[in-house]
Amino acid sequence: MKSFYKELWFNISERMDFINITTDVEKCIEESGIKEGLCLVNAMHITASVFINDDESGLHKDYKRWLEELAPHAPLSRYDHNLTGEDNGDAHHKRQIMGREVVVAITEKRLHFGTWEQIFYGEFDGCRQKRVLVKIIGD
Amino acid sequence: MKSFYKELWFNISERMDFINITTDVEKCIEESGIKEGLCLVNAMHITASVFINDDESGLHKDYKRWLEELAPHAPLSRYDHNLTGEDNGDAHHKRQIMGREVVVAITEKRLHFGTWEQIFYGEFDGCRQKRVLVKIIGD
Amino acid sequence: MKSFYKELWFNISERMDFINITTDVEKCIEESGIKEGLCLVNAMHITASVFINDDESGLHKDYKRWLEELAPHAPLSRYDHNLTGEDNGDAHHKRQIMGREVVVAITEKRLHFGTWEQIFYGEFDGCRQKRVLVKIIGD
Image (cartoon, rainbow over all chains, first blue to last red; front, side, top):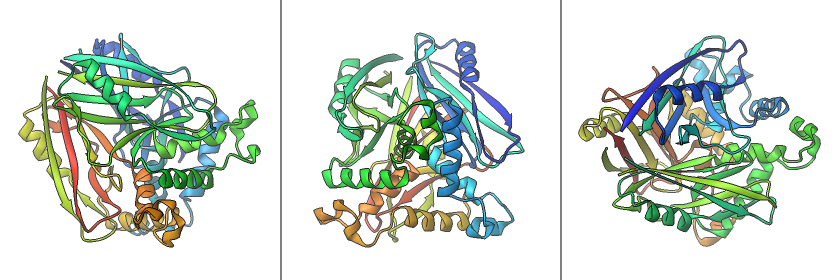
């Protein structure tokens, strides 16, 4: 069994945004030399997500509006978590909706994906350096 | 290390419905010959889910009502995504609540499950051919 | 390839509560002797979650309030599932928001975690014995 990992760094200039990291993950798979296996991609921060969906700007706008409805940023007093001096209570909630991680199959050296599947890093408390882990095991 | 995959095809006749695919996954495990390992089951489409919960028709009715409240299908104008000509903006949201995938343990050739765990394919934009991937690695 | 599993038992004295199980998972990794691999941690019950977030009591209070808003326990008649004689319809919904499982990387014999990542068992229908599965594969 082989294993491989890489940490990817991001600094998103908005509080909330989504960026397509599919190509980064594909490069990791190539670098790993693994032909058949499983690839875990997870946010290493608890106010961010990794998820799979469509690379369509209208949908991303919809997601932002919807997440803001489900877990509004303001008023900050809405969240006991913000009593610690943080202002990211909402981000911890948004991340639970969108998820921490994805596990994807590698078949014949490639992401085993449907036509429209793309991997996104979802930031909910941006404007700082944050990491995503790619861990691959297989043969 | 051994690996195995199979793509399962479904065509659900409702816009939204849940079907129990536990037996399909069990057949894959048997076919794979893998005794100890991990099994990934994921929707290959971004308007569908794979999730684990109870096979109880009242609960499934509850889920449908709740998902419709959280992300209503109509009015279509609610979603910028629908400006692309699609009418499935809601389905992309419902899928995020229910999740893309499950990872399940295989122990002694069997799904290592609690008493009530069952695997479901969740369709949110049906009436078309769609795929689920089962990928297994182990020994 | 090596594999390892352990079932952890919990009996939470509240209907809804979150407990930090990171140390339990670390012990499993040590016991497994696996240096590089993937570790699945999942609830074996369908009214409970395993998730990764912050060990901060204010945040946990926020989560409880928020989950109660999204899927209230009462009135019981809100859920068709409760017509079966159960009173845990809400718990099946809360679990979908928080997720069934996490998959975490093991690198150099340790959880490959960001600074604030901690693993929680999330109970939504407590006051009874329930199990969490830890399954590890790797080398």
